[in-house]
Each structure stands twice: as structure tokens, then as C-alpha cells.
Length: 321
Image 1: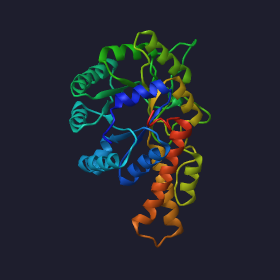
Image 2: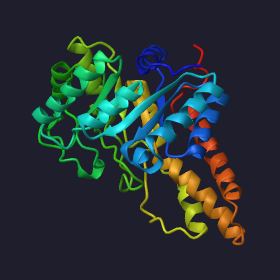
Image 3: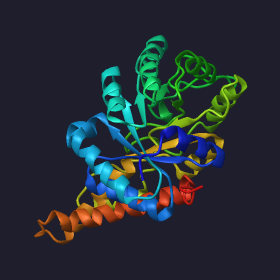
Image 4: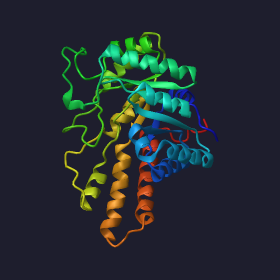
């Protein structure tokens, strides 16, 4: 079947109260694992391509791989640019037929972020493409500058509800990635810290009260960094620190119920693939056939994706809803 438009996936996810899994793709094995897992679980899926992936694999190779996956699959599949850092990159992906793009101006002051986002939105909407932006900075819960008296600081790292409303109205952006304690990589939290789910609820309510409807929010940096994968990597020669920690899956499930329509997962895929590869090479050090370690790696990633869509994002069985 052809690509499914991101806006159609969002509409169904909002109606069904589930979250879409947005999984990053860098090579054939990852793509196969993600799509096969979602096919078996009957889950819609968003395939994310980052600037780094385009540089690593070449956009033409990635496009042909995705075309192959789409031609062999029956589930709805959308293609999304993850963390586009310029108008030019977003334009390239829009022109290539991506169903959505993200313009990440979160490192810029509010006005500059909005200005860049609006430029991308204006071009994208003329070409039937939707846009995701980010407000706030994904630096982890331990960096929050604190809330006093139950209010929300404008000078902190997290997304402020009122600013979210202002930003969406200024830019016309179709979805918004929020900063509520989530962060990229394998070292997200210290101790028993969690996402600021009350803030997420406040952002969702502010958008609704402002007349923006059931607005789709996005959760970046949402890998859970499973302890068993970290331990397996280290068991077979890795050196991941014991402080590696991700977003608890229970937090992600609550975030889904509170209105996160799209949840990004990348680090967990890398951990699963690395754990499987290390195991094969450790147990059979004479092995040099890539198929003998990439095959198990693909299977490990597939197992993880099936778990995520079925038990965390709860989007399984919704592919044909």
C-alpha cells in the first residue's frame, strides 16, 4: 500500500487514545525489524529519518528501502524527518515526499524559533506536508529550574503551557514536541526521577482551552533504556555506565493517556541491536559473516518494537481501525 499521511495517522490516534510509535531508521535491518514487528502487531507506524541517518545511509538508499518496506506491508506507514535543523533540510524532505517534517529550533530564543517554524510551515502546507516543532529543551529532569507555588517558570528548560499556546497560534504548526523532563540518549535521569506529567496535563488543557482542540503533542527522548539490555551489553564486553537510565514505561503510558500522540524511540533500538551483536561476537569470536550477527540483532529489535507498540503505546490492532 502507499504511504499513509501523518495527519491521517494523528487523527486516528487522537480518536483511539493511543500513541503512534515513531522509530528511527538508519539501515535495512532496523527498518525490517520495525515494519515486521508492527505488521505482526497490526500497528500503524511512523518511520523517522534524521539528518545523521541521511548522511550515513544516503537519502536515495533510505528512500528505496522504505519504498520496499511499504510495498511489502499492509499497515499504514508514514515517513517523518526527525530533528531537521534548517529550512533547507526540511524543504529537501518535503520535496522528496515525506509525509511530515520536524523543524527543531528549540535551541533558539522563542521569537527566532517561531520565525523559523513559520517559514517551514508556510512551505510545507503548500505541499501537503505537516510540521512538528519543539518548544523547551530536552535536558533531563535533573536540570529543571524548579517550580515555586505550583506555577511554571518562564526561565526554565521545560515547556510552559501559555507559551505553547502562543507558539502554536503564531506558527500554525501541526504538532508540538514538549520538554517535560525527557532527554535524548541513554543517560536521561538520576535516581528515581520521572517525567513532569502534571505539566503535560497543563499544556494539553491550555491548548484545549485556547480553542486549539485535541492538539497532538509529541514526546521525544522516550527510550526506556531497559536494564536488561544494558546488563547484556556489559556482560559481553560493553562499558555502559550503571547510571544509564531512561523514561519509565509507566510514565510513557500515562503520557499517552494524557495526550501524547507520537512517541519517539531510537536509543532502545540501538541498545537492542548492540546487545545482540555483542553476544554473537563474544560467544563465537571466529564469526565474520555479518548475516550471523545482524540477523539476531534484527530479531532483538523486532522483539522490542513488538513490546513497545503492544504494551506501552497501545497502538497494536489499530492499523485497520
